Length: 482
Image (cartoon, rainbow, N blue to C red; front, side, top):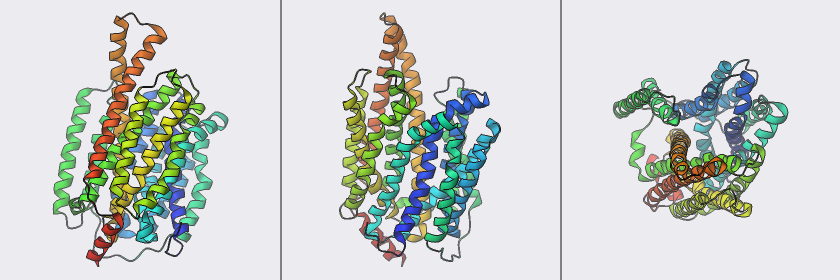
């Protein structure tokens, strides 16, 4: 990789390490939940907060930390985030009860939010415009490796060393990453004239939590529908208040003028629907592998390995191409491939040949890799340097919103349609394993169709975002700033 700026390779590697650590932790913790539940002798409803609290905190705080990093320095926030993530990982592993673990996971997520909201901006500042796609592909590879390693390595570590090990492994990684961040990331430039927007920060955090939390709990039959509806309405009101306040604020946490840029807006919303599509498939796949094909947790993770490997291969290729050509067509092609792969997955049954399953997972990874890097490059290349922290945080927020919505939608669809299909097929005389398989297959097909629809929406948004190459957008934007 021919990165031009001094120490840029080390900077990109440092950000990739932080990206890997935060993404690995998300995937590995999911695998460990059953053991955490039994270890603390608690319920599924309570132990799920180990994941839900983490994801909600990530979603709700990235815009805040993105703005803070623009005001007080990308390097400063990134180093604090790396060090804080390391310490909070130690505290998570040492938790004496489920309440302590959930609290320390929230602290861990706050630090992870610092890393995620600043990483892309640090990479963009470290490399020359013509190499931006290549550099961002490195972080995309880190995501793919973490997605691959999380379920498999996390499952093995949990089986052999206990659930605490998935947090303790972050300690040496975090120490190394903190030192590298202090040494390799370029110094922050002095900034003046702008102030932090505490009211805007509180409003957006409140809005995202109140909107996303009830959506995440739609599949839970024990949740009061009035409570869900009330939370959604309150969250929407808070979001409206945030928008109105930011429009009048002299120092907004989110410059809404950025959304006047069609590339920035459409690429961000395309990211939401892409991650919804991807996470609906990621959510349904373990159920199919473990309950329909009767595979172990560890082996299920290995079966999904081609998805991550294909993404690792395709991300740098698509990133390099997006540096030279119109990136929207690369993104659209990737989304088309992803949608076709999801539709193919919807036809699978317990006896589907393993080779065909592996091929579809690989094709899914190819499509995701073709979209991920060019779209990120388009977003980050459409804003001036002074707003890259907020732009990266906005993209990160959209990513996490898509993840939460994808998981919530798939869980709700799966739960409802399994119950509905079970009633219908039972009336025809099916029973036992045959009834369970028929009901699940129908529900899985519906989830996959909705997932493919999300890919189609993302494809449309990518197609209409504009025809300028990302490098040209960046140069034109920076010339206007100068």
